[in-house]
Image 1 (cartoon, rainbow, N blue to C red):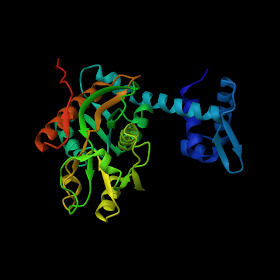
Image 2 (image 1 turned 30 degrees about the vertical axis):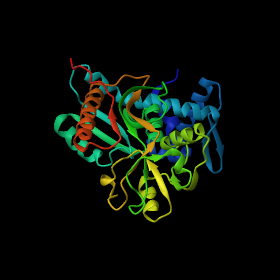
Image 3 (image 1 turned 90 degrees about the horizontal axis):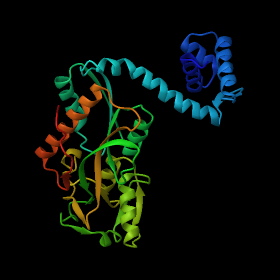
Image 4 (image 1 turned 60 degrees about the vertical axis):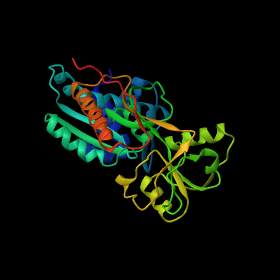
Length: 313
């Protein structure tokens, strides 16, 4: 019968890349570790590892087992907190991912608010791009994610919070802060994120629908790099931001809304397969309130709040 230790040992070998390193890490004799993996392969009826003088790597079946076993063990790690949450107390670890494009100053402020409002919750923040946050939620490496979306695929439990309009960003001497027609963007050298970035996907769809071909002169993943390139005069860019004050963009022109409007949806997501523990639900509620309060204070251009406040029990 397959047991917890089999999965734990297998994951350790894959991540270490060799039996000897894995044996040293998990404090087990190498012959015993090899025997455990052999038992696992016999039980499953497939070869899980490719062995060579340079180490080991998973077979196709091994990659499937590694992905699924990692998810299972992560859920087991969370089990004590889930059980304790049945008492009604919000306590335990909550891992929250957030798109780096959405409110860059929010993570620090929210960590402080979470400490004050939920003292028994250990919050771990992860800042990345939206596709990465989504992948980590699917893999159960994150409990919650705040992401920008163009297509609301039915993979997650989701609460759409607000819509964010796309804006043209360019130097102060050129920008007028007035609406910019999509058709006029094709005459500009553009700095855009590479696909499958959410902003790029929405733009490409809009250009294709209008039968337009944009002049993309540079691709960059990181918003700070895009801003630096705009500042250097490489070209203009399109971002889901109508206010650059939180990104040291005061020397750039006023963002110009694109016409017709192109929107991204900012959603709070969690796994569609596993319910959140009380601590996760408490963080989701607190974070939603935090985002709404922050947006009301800043009155960021191009933002439309669409969430419906759920009644508290």
